[in-house]
Image (tube, rainbow, N blue to C red; front, top):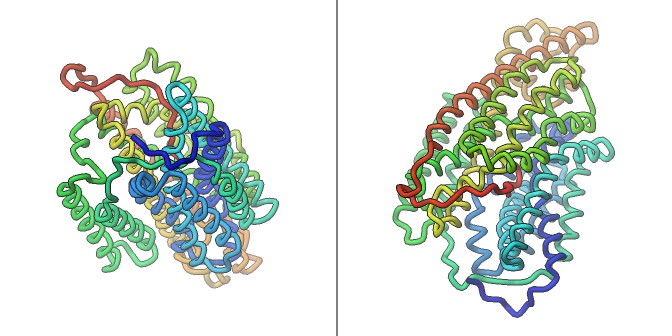
Length: 524
């Protein structure tokens, strides 16, 4: 139950538009930054580890602060938290656009992640207080559509911005749109929850710290070594903080995570599916643009157009899958989702230097179709897997797990790809070092960041063409191996999910039915 602060529930249309525009920026901030990475690398020459934090810092803070931001919004006011989040997001984007050092961008991206968590949680709560009954379902459907639009057209729009105005134009556009949202946000209704609980800071800190330690470890490991004492210490710290988190949550009267929910096998399955899809779909949003720009030398605009083959099905398939869900169980649809994404990743190994768009269109569409099916049913499957009175907690935990899975997937696969490419380069780069080629480690960092051309310019002209062929082949070999890892992991997850989602008698579980629902995940 909420207590209004004197601001009438007026202008519902303006409220819906404002929240949807703000929500649509969140996936744009992921896909936009991934399209900007090659330009940032060429301009600032930051090194691969620092460059990866442009994406990882945003996702990390976004994922780990979702539930804390929701609790704060209930206590401080939903509109106030929405304004605070918009200020942070707009300011951080403006700083990123003007930054002259990678550290400034990384810190600004972390602040943007904090703002994104505040905007998403408070914006959803504002809609819940503004609309009732069937109108509420339509409002959240519109919000889900805005996320889908940002996901589907984010790479294309960001590619246009990079081609027209450079990488800074991406962040400047985010700042401009967020500023418009901020100017209108004072007209939104304010509300607070009379039953708001205290923020679980201990759970938030231990959970965030564990994620941070893991991401630091996997990002730094390719440079310093997986057995380096620093890497080992970070992994140990990650484990200890996660143990502390579990211990803290079990002792809390009002925990951030109700860990008993994981006793429900169907709920566990619903939480594992987006983690698997993060490896098979979300990582490609980050890694594929750099590959196309580095190996084939295409423009950011053309890379964005190519990624439409991957993202556009996520706008079309939810409606089709929602219709199919009347006759086909969520269990079957989600298993099919994983098989499509895994099969598409295996098929995508046809990608190589010089292949045409038609060659990779089939696998990209296959992966996109699989992802689109999941968007129609995954949220509803998670929420319907628990008792109705625990649906709110289940939804919050599910979204946090999904975003955390994306953090882990992007960080892990980025580092794996860098390591594979470096190992392949090490096999033959010695023959080019007399002609000016850098070390395998340095070359891998530049190439994976999307700047093979800059590395090639250091090689003597008479050896340059041969070096480009060798380096592009090494990167492609690494990319192929990474794709096979993604494919195998996703396909193997399918039977596991199928078993966890096996039907149980309603009398035994007391659970409610599974309505189809549009996903509200800002990335997926």
